[in-house]
Image (cartoon, rainbow, N blue to C red):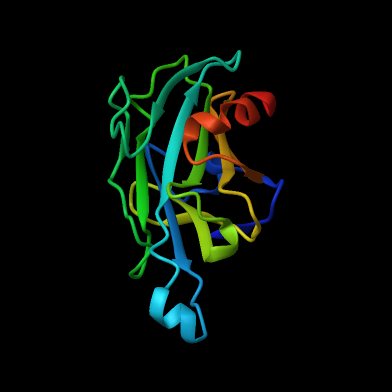
Length: 192
């Protein structure tokens, strides 16, 4: 059974998984807030285009690579973004990032997961947002519900860290202003 995480909690993915971890899938899902009223019915709020990204860092916090909707594959080919969902409509994960831990270079110590509102719509327009981690059998290991609503346009979701041969998942949930992952790099690097 998957572990439900709260903000600022950390688990060992290696110990929590039911199989030896070789690959991970990071799934992100959300829904646009349903608008009510006459004007909303006519004009609407528009689709909510959230973009998931993964920042690869070394043990000093230096950014090694960024995987996003603009660059779907890491230089080492071990981190793959599965494509951009521009609406948040539909069931299940809206965006996924797959990580091959066996092919990940040894100098990658951290991987930060972020989400940004491409059109600058605030997270007050988003509901039911979550991040989940699955192993190579697509069994859910843990889930983190993103309850941060407000005027911010990005969330530093989580940090994956390599510690003594194990992978740990730290639920961050830090609201950030920015419509692109690059806007979040100071927050990410400052948290290491």
